[in-house]
Length: 173
Image (cartoon, rainbow, N blue to C red; front, side, top):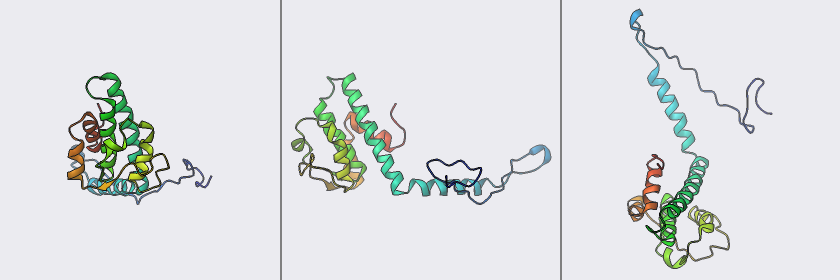
């Protein structure tokens, strides 16, 4: 392992140690005020922000979102098969997926007349600008869309509600 002696490493990762910050709890009995909290909070917020701003984190988050979205939508359809057709749920799932990348499509219905859950990973790769594989071909046209255009398009369906919950970091219930 490349980790220094006495330091646990996960998959070869070495911990990043920040500069020390002195923090003291207030103690009214000793008439001592607390200090150091603003500096500690600032250091933590900056570190978390730097980690979550990385392309790797965003890619991982979007993959989890698509996996969870697919499973929640399919579970919704199993539980309430008469409320929405599977095809419509699939189309709204594709809209939600594209919206997470700031994109939309005008031909989802014609590109996918039947649900193709197996192609969601390919659709996600296309939305990221990567090779989507032969299975997707040129069937789906993708256009850039600002969030104020893409998000309302998915807001009226069960998929939209689930996706918006995730986007607002509330998670599904």
